[in-house]
Each structure stands twice: as structure tokens, then as C-alpha cells.
Length: 126
Image (cartoon, rainbow, N blue to C red; front, side):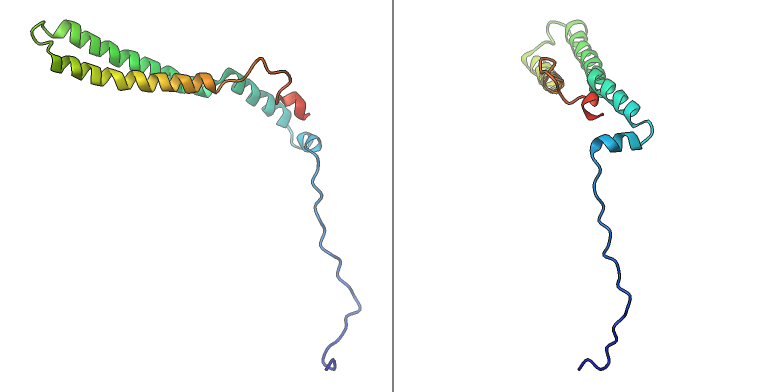
């Protein structure tokens, strides 16, 4: 039964297994990685991107609510300020203020806890 089989004299080596390097060694392997990690921590601590979102939201809300108040107070006569118009102004004002309050709550809740000792800092990964 083994007549057609030939045995090779050369043996193949087992495939090499990659040994993971610790994070400290990998940080120094990539040029400029420490500098970029420091910059990312500065951007994260200043919370630039959330501020770029929430500041225009506040400006837009102030513009819309100011326009609503201006329309209600100066462009409508006393006779035109009926219950329907007042309800319309309330229907417009309430969602704007609700969304703005929710966005501000998310912004405040997502910040760094400065009272926490230690922390996940770039200096911990060097």
C-alpha cells in the first residue's frame, strides 16, 4: 500500500510565530508617535470638537429665539396675540430649548474628571 509514496529527505520548518511586543517598545518604533499622542491629549483636554459643535448650536438657538421674540413682541399687535399665536410660539420655542439643554447636558457629562488621581495619560504609555 505504500509502494507509490516517496519520502522526502528535507523537512520544512514550522511557520514562525509573531511574538507581540509590549506597548512601550511599539511607541518608540513609530517616528513622531509620542508627539502626536501629546497633541491628541491636548485636543482632548481642550474638548475642541465638542465645542465646535455646541457653540454654533447656541448661536443658532439664540438667533432663532431672538427672532421669535422679536416677531411676537414688535410685529404683532395686541389684538393679534391670541392663544393660537402664543401656542405657536411655544411650540417653536420648546423643542429648541429642549434640544439645546440636552446637548449641553451631554457636553458637560462627557468631560474629563479632573478630581481623579492618575488617569489615562500619555505619560503612562511611554
